[in-house]
Image 1 (spheres, rainbow, N blue to C red):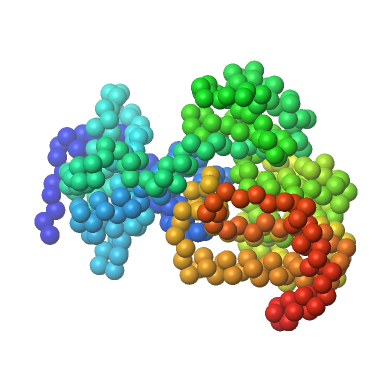
Image 2: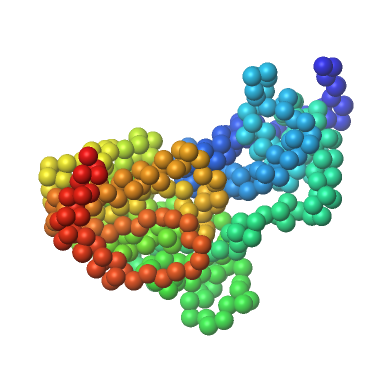
Length: 433
């Protein structure tokens, strides 16, 4: 195949801008990990090793949301020769191509001027400079733009946002949740007062909230010390309250297990699947750092991430253990003293409306994880049977198709019935074997 020569104007754009190619290669890897269920958007993009966290979260999230549309454009533009496969092992990885296409068509390219040129690049110049950093795609830039134009006319849309499902579109309006970490901040009221000094408006006592200001917050109606913030317009990645551990961004559903368990100060608690550590730090906060929490995590990478988060949160009563919960002997030390178990197995986030990850289509591996979740549940029940002093409460994630309510007292009553039904436990033990 005869390769086209780059235009002189394109070469000029390349000289005027510096594109961080490694950033996009990393973004492509994170999109791949997200699709394969290896982590959530936040756990993947907010790792301490990731630079420009806000920009990375936005790029990975947007590429993930529009990957179906991007695939259609790739097929129409015949870009199969541009990404890595058996015939072209030296090309870009497939998910990197997805990221580059998103940024080229709809993203905001950050192209820093080189030292030899002080001229500010226009949007078109920045996009041309950007695509030139990926030679296998730069030869097709006109075709890529043309195919997006044709597809937008065919679908009668102006922006890719119009192709999103109603569920995904809803995500953009769901507020962010942040838990006030009372291990670092003296009280929720203190944080709220400091936020108001920064120009935030407290909407907690407002009956009608139709015309909300740009910067607002309000207390959650159910979970103590949990605040709501607008989903757009405010970045907290570099905010001092997040850096010093005063605020921990955490889904409301993720706050429920610790809130339901509510171990008192001085209790001995076992967190069976502790990473990344938000629920563990919530337990430590409820216990005022008094007592002990055995935080179990078998994956070494997630274990390291959990240690970093717990240190930032100031959870000094936590003893992290790099172990497999399914292999723990409840009669051995130190687990003989456990009084409470929190079991929240890793899952896809199904039923959590603010989680983009829950829209990943299930795979055989994901189905295996769901089966493993049940296995964790059986193990925890058997654990409680062996040591009947232990109080056990759990949250199983599942797809929520309609609004529902549950009674915590009813849940407790059911669990107590199972705990005292010896025949049921003997049957479970047989199933475990």
